[in-house]
Image 1 (cartoon, rainbow, N blue to C red):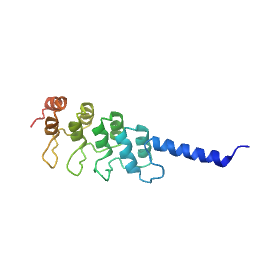
Image 2: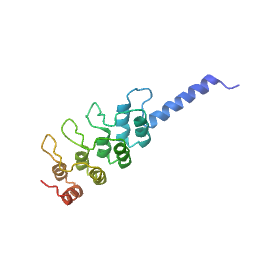
Image 3: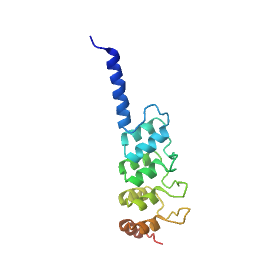
Image 4: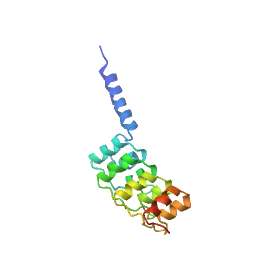
Length: 157
């Protein structure tokens, strides 16, 4: 005879592990933060799940005040960025210091992510509250591919 309790317990543990491995925290109740974390990790399945359940595509994380799109751009997660953009992520939304997803791509040298943002309407000339543009950040960080790309768009100091 099979012990149903042990089998059911194992099943619950397996499901909880699967959810954790997928980038979601079981029973957390905060889909917005699940979305941000999944976007940071590039977990497209979890991003789609959170959005499908009603997560705010423009929600910011409580620690750094960055959106899911900002994190995905920061990490160069192109597939995740496409999903967020398709779901209406605000391309030029600003963080607390005025940074945008495009600014993060300049900082991190994420050229393909920057091109994706520009193709979807990001303003490459936007300046943060500190007066730094994506161009300035790219120059400071030595991201020459980003500098060359922005100059090809007519953006410079």
